[in-house]
Length: 355
Image 1 (cartoon, rainbow, N blue to C red):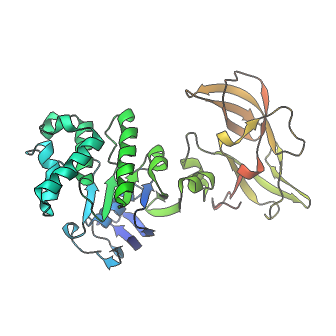
Image 2 (image 1 turned 180 degrees about the horizontal axis):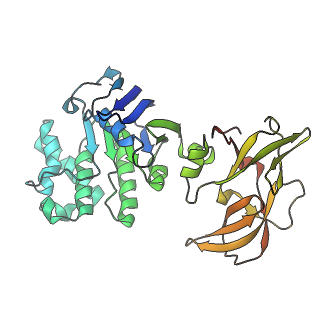
Image 3 (image 1 turned 60 degrees about the vertical axis):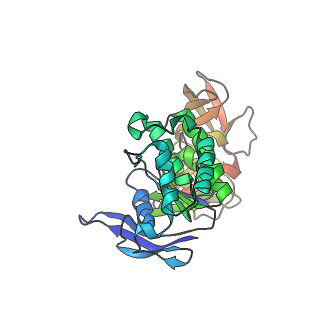
């Protein structure tokens, strides 16, 4: 089990890379740290690994404090974004080296190597040196070197970032299967939302050195904690429309300068500045609409082709609005239903979700 308590890191130039991060990972859990460049996710990972000293806070592994223990004493399998292979060793020797370090006998070393070689499909590379490999193949070998043994913790820093898109998806599945089989607790750093959604038991979203939300992939996507998460997750992100709340007793409305949208009755103070959010795939184009249904009327400006679907760009009285559709609409007006169960309401000033 991994536990971070109020972990912080300030660099000598005064940059606060990580500020008061506290989190835990259960045995066998795969935790993904997700966020843009500079959010503190890699610095957090390096402090867990013992490659960076915290300014404050502590790191515990299996109940033991290891905050200031050297990396070599933490029993961690670490894969960097860049390969870190031994250039003078063949692929086979690179894979065997960590097993020799822990004193594993030759027979068990060979069995472990054979398993990883089969999973990663790298048998044809075993006699090659790193300089003879492509960047993607070097990254696969680095991943294999971590997977070849069973540490108490895997730490992955963008391990698939240099690998071609098609192979990347296969390797994610390979690594996830291995991780589940071995039940090794894993912390995985990425800026790739698709990667986070595919791999994670739980996602930790970071921004400016702090955690802004944590939860299962479904929770952080469908129930964003604030406007940042709502906009950050998804491609495209959530539709966000600013307005104010009108409470008229039996009925409530979300009002903008140009429109009023009927809303379910929720306990929000009258005349409060509100931002309404709904994802493009959670709305539907309907004709006719139920009179009581929350809806917008908009004119199609263009259809954006996405392969298996279209993103419709609408001009509505509430502002620009995106709708996912199975077919193109080149022009004309349409009614867009906003399902009550899919709507998110945020405080415009604080950004925090209200309902």
